[in-house]
Image (cartoon, rainbow, N blue to C red; front, side):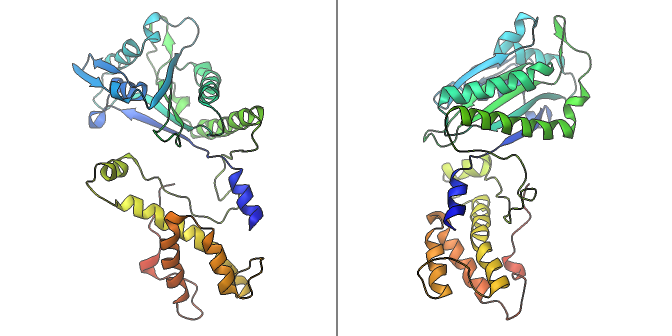
Length: 316
């Protein structure tokens, strides 16, 4: 058990998420850029001001990366994303692509930013995209991450290209980008002298018997922070999944051996189970014990958790 815990401590958080921001639903490339750079920008197309200048403490640094010989209007946040807005005519136009990357807490802010910039320059700008890279971190310093906004079109002379490169939407490219980012992160960690590493592969591909933890999401966090909903359903779901993942090794061990397999001085499996419970994080402990009790109260010989206790469908 101890070796497993040491292994987990040496694993840094991996995340590379890509999504397309569309005009549908009132979204705007200018608004997206203002939020991610912590600035005040005017959307010329909609004649609307987007002011996120009060977020400057959460935005540590931003930079625009451009292919060689790009026109000067691509060098400024306002002119770049306003040109994107004015170029796209459709009501449901795809405006820009966003990459969200977790950067290791084991690196300092300068190292984190240089890591993201280097990767974006090679994998995005090198393929013709204009990219704006912004390093964010929470007030408590525990959530360093990078937002990269990229154009959907290449630069053609002084303007955007008439057609969007469809190969940028290829799923295989995203798979490659995830692997490429993992390699870049691990190289940076190694250079910094850290033993931590990331792995871009899924839990299934790594043969890890654990349920993927869903994201709480900004909507649920917003409701909680504003006190609108003290304990949003999304937060409950995350705790539920954590409890299942904590209990799962016990369940697997009982099914296979008839008791919890654990080395230690305790004589009975109940005592050893309590030792294991002590290693579970405080936030999930109550949920773990509740789930464990339900597991023990199953009918003899049953192999399924009762339907009312099963985990809901999760976002992968």
